[in-house]
Length: 447
Image (cartoon, rainbow, N blue to C red; front, side, top):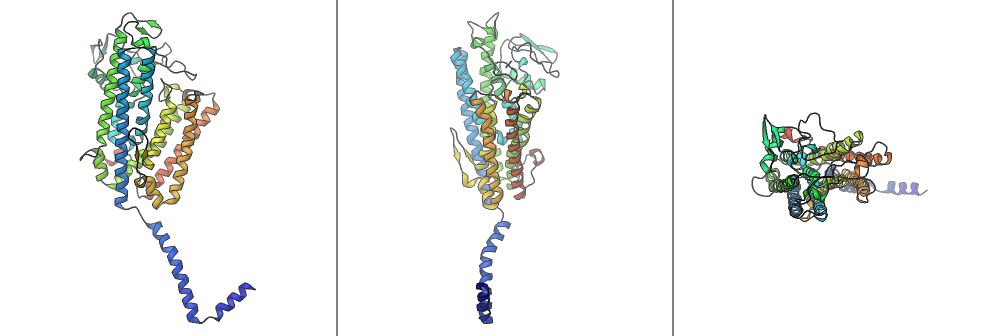
């Protein structure tokens, strides 16, 4: 009855009244629909996108500055160990190494979008390494068949054959280490960077998939009680050379991180400056490609899936120290940080209004919501792995063991989340009108 009365009342109105009412409804409809259509078709402005790149550059500088400062503190602890070897100074140097990994691991979200970072990275983070090239190893050590120097032991040897001539190894110096890496042309000949230092501080991990990291004794650095692991050394020479190696590689690490920090500075003509001032879409391509590539190909693939498929402890990133759970966590955190334009450290940075996340929320709210959820799910999955290590329940070399179904599942869950996260980042790029390309395809003009 009510509907019939309403129709009767409408029919009783004059044609002019009905026309006016219809016009009002059209106006109301346009008030709702036009903004919706505008929102769907609108694209970020040039100034908005350039602001995102400017925040990205500033954040990169801050994180590399933290990495550099942490490397300085690491050098101080290494110097203390060499000058006053003891179990306490060895443990302090190890802790400083772990602390230095925290900011550095978060910079890796920058690596794959920028050729100058990717080329430089080999000097600071190459792994796996043939540790037998550097120092003594256990009889169970599997030397690489493609590396003639896999058991060279430059600490324990008096000379090494290089290009047909014998090079003396009485002392460990800068040019000598750089020469080894350049002449060998073998990826596993690594004598600089974090993992060469890691091996020297912890020694070889002989535990396989069982609990336990490297167990190098502090006496390996003592000139008065010099040892080679469990054995007393014939002289103080190998201990002296280990100290020289530690200090030399620590100084090189500081120099390399300082160099990369300056690349991201605001000074005119730096790669960071050219990124912000250059072609905007090329810059955003580099940014998003770096986040996506670390998420799916490198972190989920090379660093987790390969280790899970092979069950090989050697495929664990920090295999001497058993600190891989932290490196994985901070790698993932770095991706998230650069998406949201935030960072906590000595040089904290917060610019949410200029973040990629804010841009997505403004123009692609549905996708932005999916990305928020994906980052949360990744964080939960990565935290589960980290908690296993931090609580000393299971480290990554145990989680990847072939008979550890629960540990394998924990890693696989994180892999799946990282890959899903990368797919959404790729969608965001397409929405911005960008078909992601590797840096090599973009050339070096913008960098």
